[in-house]
Every structure is written in C-alpha cells, then in structure tokens.
Image (cartoon, rainbow, N blue to C red; front, side):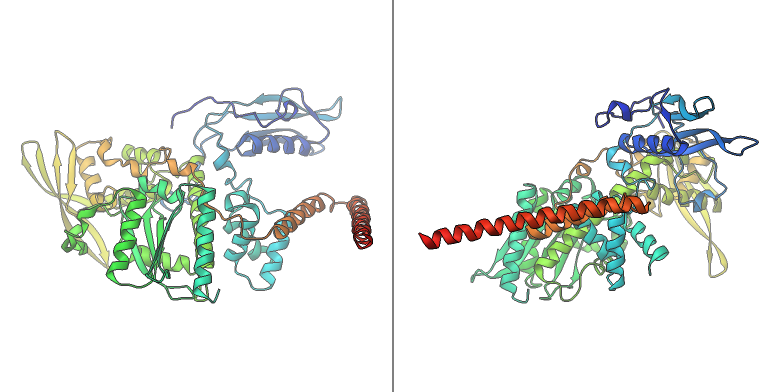
Length: 573
C-alpha cells in the first residue's frame, strides 16, 4: 500500500479545535475528549497507545493517543478465520500529553497532524469507534422493542427520522446488540394513485430516477417498472451478470414482483431495478424487459437466440459471478421477508423497496469503510496472495485465500510439453464422506504469455483463480499474477460513480406536524442527555421548560384574544 503524508481537511474546524503544542487541560480526560472530538471532525479514529503511571501514587503522568492506523498489528488468530481487518499504514498522526506538576494541569508536548492515509468523511461515520446510540435513539428502541416490533423495523423507523440510514451514526447490528445486551389501501386504484404520487416525488428528488407504468385499454394498472438513480449508476459496474426473479408475491394484491439483481465488488447482491406485473403473460414480461433495457441503455439481446445455453453445464465457462439461477433468488426472498408481508399495499411496497435500497446502500458503504481501514492477513507467504490482498475487497480476498489454502492439497501428476505450451495434469485431494479422493484437472499453460486455463473453469465463471492454476504458477516460478487475472471488478481501489449517488429516499411520508414533532423530540432528548449526570443540573432544563411552557401559554392566550377580538369586530361590522 502506497504511503502518503496528508493533512486532514480542517475546513469545518475552528482554530482552537485543532491540537497544537502548548495546549493545557485541567484533566487528562478533557485532553482525550478534545483529541477524539478533533479526530471525529477530521474523519479518523483514535486509540490510546501508551499511558505511564507514577510509581508511587499510581496516577497517570503522561499518555500517547494515536491514529488507530498507526502500526501493523500481529494477531494470534489464524489468518483464514480472522474476521477483523488490521491496520497496515504506519500512520504517524498522534498527540503526547503530559502532567505538569508545577501548574497541576495537563499540557500537549507533541502534536503530529499528518496522516499516511486519506481521511474520508463518508467512510469515517461507519467506523465502530464513532457508531453510537444517542439517548433519544435508546428510548425509541426500548419503546418499540417492548411492543414486539422487530429490530429491522425499528432501525428503518429511526432511519426515516433522520433522512436515511447513513445519517444515523450506527448500524442495524449495533441496534441488535443493544437490544440483546440491555433489553429483551384496500382499493387497488387508490393504491396505484398513491404509488404514482410516490414515483413523481422520487423523480423530483432526483431526475435520474426512472419509472414507467403500463395501463390497459380502460386506463387501469397493468405493470410498472422503476429504477433508482443509484441503481442505474451501479449498472455500469455490476451489469455483467443479472439475475431476474419473479417468484416473490408478498403484496396485498398478489401481483408478481420482478427483481433485477446483480453482484457488487464485495460479492453481495445489489439491486438493479424492479417491476410489478399485472399478470405473467409473455407480453407483460416483454414490456418489462424492454422498459428496463430502455432505462439501462444496454443489454445482451443475443441471449434468447442462445437459450439452449441457459442450461448451467453449457455456461460453465462463462462469467456469472458465482451466481446460480436460484441462489440469489432464495437469498433475496429471505431478505425481502424482513420488509414485506402479504398485507403490504402497493404504496407500502414501493416504500419498503425504498428502504431495501437504503439498507443495501448502507451495507456497501460499511463494506467500503471496512476495506479502507486495513486488510486481513495473508494465509500463506506467497507474493501472489499478497498481490490479491492489496487489490481485492476483503470478502473476495477471502475466496482467494480458500484457493491458496486448497493449493496445499494439489500436486502435479503429469506434464505434456509442446513448445511453449504445457498441459499439466493436476491431482487435488478431496475429502468426501471421510474418504480421500484424488480428482484430476488439466491446466493448459503458455510459457510465453503466462496465460493458463483450468478445466474446472473457476476463474472463467467466478473471477477467482483456482488452486490448480495457482499451483501451476508456483511450479513454474511465476510469483506475480498477470494483470489479466486480477479483475478490476473486485478491486477496492476503483472509485465507482454510483457511490456518489444517494438512493432516493422519500421525505414526504409524514405530514408537517409529525415532522415538527419528531424534530422537537430529538432536540429535547439531546438537551436532556446533557443534564442527567447531576441532580442540581437536572433542575436547570426543568426550570427552562417551565418558563418556555409559560411563554407558550401566554402566546396562545394572546392569539386567542386576538382571534376573539377580530371575530367581535367582524360581527359588529
């Protein structure tokens, strides 16, 4: 990983919020809180590296607080099973605070603000150091949990309150952990009208939002296709393999739901649009597919001509991102089940799909943030594995690691040379029902171009080099993977355009009074949170609220008096 020296963006900071040598604090905790607050605004995370204590009093006398990406950590956990990423940038950003015995306070003796990595505002909010639940959020979670509302529904409600999950400051997993630790339109036409109103609002929010509705001769609803702006942008990167599924019917009117699903650079399902069908006739599918292609701009049209190739054995050598015809459908059915049910109306359905998009966006941002923090350790000493470690996202690199581990079970059986071309027969030992079987695979390798192909077709179908190819590279002392086998599709270094596009979130679901009420409640909770540590301080907001209530009562009385006076004047006239 290339190291850089970079100063974080201080545009949102006041001069006295930036650490500098000579700053003094009454307590060590105040110095720590000051640096943590600075780090949060500068978009990086901190950790206490060392603390020195007085030998006699056992009180702290100095402390070093570093950027959490300071040094490479060695872990005792075996590499293939380790889940947490490790910092690997050697960042020098830190402060050193020491107790001044003469003045009896704490002073900053050393300050280094330069980082060896970019500080990302978008990714920093997903670091676990900054993910926390406010008191207001905890109260809402407790109330909802007590009445049996599921955690994912509570998370969505809180997301709607702040304008999307990315504004929450914590993940659904954090919410679930808190609960575990601390708590235990009937008319289809009216439904369609509400759905159309939703589509128009989404189009106003982002002109790239696509929707189209098909009506019958009596102007009644037949089918609808809609694609979020973020989904349209992501198609450029994830449109090479698309799964189309119409077996999900969880809505009040029993309309088939068509979901277009791709695979992102983390190997996760990503949504590329959806549709509701009035029926399952061929004409309905033709209309949906034609409108979806119109939205996306391009598609493979020769697919139907080669429909005999749809049998899995025929496209074994084609890239399909490890996606079986039913694999993604089954996983997406389970995923949708957490949001949709048999009584979901059409407008609720599209709202819930809106929430699904927000969840998928949040998950991808969290995965990107995890990759930006560091890498998981290699399972072997192979320089080729190190190459994949630096290029690929963590989830895909784990798949690569599996092949490097399996390489130990492979051995060269026979070699047939014809000039620069070599056919290597590789035997892989596999454990099947407590019995070791040797399975042979032919790997064709070209010395001159370093190109190779295994008959298992793992790379061609999934984009990951198989253990047989890796063993051939190793046998012929190829220590750097040719660029053609390091796919940009799985790269964590590419800046993808769709990550700059937010999924369209409907902000007009509640009336203005509800929005104002939620805003006031959030403000009240945040204020109360600052006054619960001391009984004397607790009286302050009570007094302030009583004064505010008195002023509000006087204001209401004045308005009533003016209204009565105006009415009497009108009557007199």
